[in-house]
Image (cartoon, rainbow, N blue to C red; front, side, top):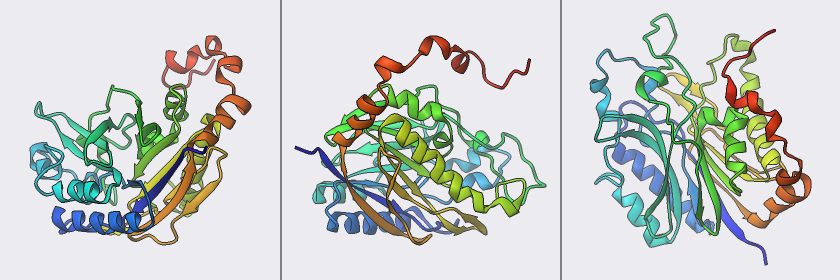
Length: 307
């Protein structure tokens, strides 16, 4: 009997600086209801789904940015999302900025079950961008100023009848992200992202960003025998155009569903988690064919060494 998990990718259009959290939560609620009407059991929202992508601005005193962060989850403002999920019997995955009691700042994603209970938390490992103000840029990409890279690594959790992992945005570009979860038997990876379309040295190459987005997630899915759900916040946000192209990808690397707009949109797919075994055990038999004794360089150094 198939282990089917009906999953939804709930893409968001832009959230502007003047949009408050209540309006963002109302949009998430609308998407959650649309997904539930389509019989989805798990709804995946984007990275930083409660606010605009604030790392595009720089503030001299980082405490002036505290209002962008969540200090509790659920909070009074986000509680309706948890309540509605419990009422509908639908779980969800949500990305947001986290400020801990010890004043650590993380780019965070949580997994919430059908009872509205947080069952897992992931904090972004690969933080892109820069740490200092670079005023000559058309907009900042100061993620490394606003967020600490997590040392917690890539977990896999038993939930929704399978083995679920999470990653955020830039994590999807690193094969190590998928492999560490693949070695834990992951069957579905949930990934929220915000990807500006003009963050390349040569703007004429913007067309490649959609290609690269699909390439890394499809190859990661195929090489590790797992479903991947990639969900964007797209459209023109505060003058910056961002990639949409949310998709649900099979362990074969095939795209099962993909958004057609750069606005709020729900796509769904029924994912047979048993399909993963065809790739994990039959095509890529890790236990038989992997050679970790010759891969030491992967964890032994960071940048390329030319010799």
